[in-house]
Image (tube, rainbow, N blue to C red; front, side, top):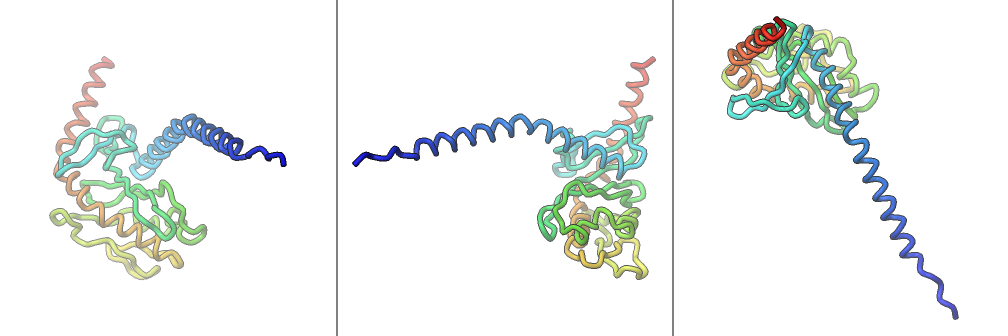
Length: 222
């Protein structure tokens, strides 16, 4: 009886070739994916910090700030054309209903209020949880939200209010049918308290640094 040739070597060879091809495609596209993500982040910073012209990323350790790449930063300081501090953007990520939600808050350290909110990445249910990035009432109630500090915690933790009811300055309009996603955003806001405390502690440095850089730029242009 003649022996049939084994197909195992062929299958292994095909699998290795497919794996090699996938690795090549990943390497070829990884750089572009990162560039697209960075551009999306910069656009979101401009959205949540109106008037920003330049930005600088920082990492935080024990209320101290150190330079960091923007896409790796814990906070992103935004400056206008004159070098004055416009505000600070805070990237955040938290588990939603379906998966991790990546978001960005804009913060005015002088008034201690949020200046905007943007969703960077979300797989929440279309038409329900996904509305955290599109619902006009929800977004309007986030803008101007009171996040005043008391020490290293919020003086009043953010919370959801019944839609249409009178809201306290630290309350956000809930979204019907998207309670889990809405609460995720609220929890992310409350989790920013340590970062807000670091910003407050280093605010004179942030403001002074921006002015020095602006003056140096003007001197080089002269």
